[in-house]
Amino acid sequence: MSYDWIVVGAGLVGSAVAYELAKVGFSVLLLDQSPDPSNATRYSYGGIAFWAGDSDLTRQLCQESEAIHPQLSEELGYDTQFREMDMLLVIDRDRDPTAIAASYQHYRIQPQLLDPSMAVKMEPLLEPKAIAAALHIRHGHVDPESLTRAYQHGLRQAGGRVEIASVERFVQTGERIEGVVTSQEIYSGQVIVSAGGLSRRLLYQMGISTRLYYTQAEILETPPLETVSLQTIVMSAELQRMPMEAKATRPEYESLWDEPGHEPVPPILDVGAIQFQDGRIRIGQLSRVLTDPDALVNASASEEQLRDRIGQVLPCLKSVPAAWGSCLVGFSGDRLPLIGALPGVSGLYLCSGFNGPFLLAPPLARRFAKSQKGEADPILAQLSPARFS
Image (cartoon, rainbow, N blue to C red):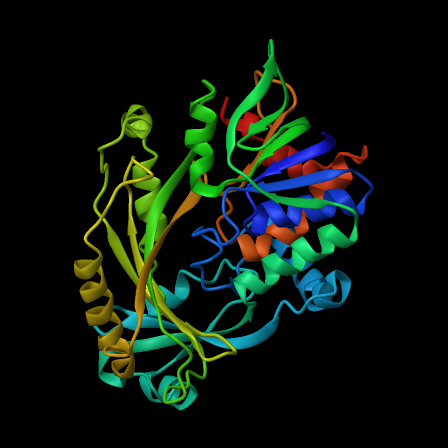
């Protein structure tokens, strides 16, 4: 069967890109190997940091995302569970609140510094002795699975197709990709790889190198709880994941990324918790840099670390019933997404490495679709995978 576009990977980014392409008139097939994939969308918090743009490019995308999200449920015909919430970025008790607050001054909207007593008024479940202060900001939020299902619903309404099948290989003639071979059928069309952290391995198997990397993220998820009610999103003000990613992409580690069995940098734990509208709570997160996407970790030890850390800040969550889960989270060499044609081969595109996918995927998917209708886009030009060539 023939399509204008074949999108490989039905997480948030792939589903958004597939929908936007179908909306502007292309025939689109969205593929995923599982009807319920254990991907980064499945295990994410669903936060949307409209406030966090720190450059002309990201501030522009923040504004666009802020305009798109409130009307997506109506546009797609499916409830994304979009809302705005208070977020508290907690500062550990041995840290300098003034210095940490100053590090946020370059963002599009600056958070407000609260002392522990003010933070506890906003979130009564916080342990005030565990924090020196907190930063307060309004933060967007969606249910990750609901937003993804909404995009897939919109895709079908626009004439697109969603198929559950594993991609076994690409159809290639010379330096041109002409489609994919799945376990069920051969499909022809231009191909977009949007398989999150697995995108690097999929492309490497074709002999294509990218500056796309991945961490293994680990969280705890509770069932719906009636006895615990978080009033805010709680996160750490000093996220360790970004410095860890920067270290992991140093040139001396590049050759390790295509060899299983390496851990270039130590793991980190960034405390965080969010309660969804149905009462579930996601608690996180441990992040590991493991060069084998199928690497196994000690889940019980990870769970103990997560429970101990969240128990210091939100004691009521330390012993709640919860299941451990993990996924791969893709990121790029400069923390900006990789979206566009891959150099050295035609007919093959990459849409991955989204740091903040719930913020960036809606506006960038829309821009990408319009660009394929002939609209020049200076923002997409800055995000091309070719920037690392």
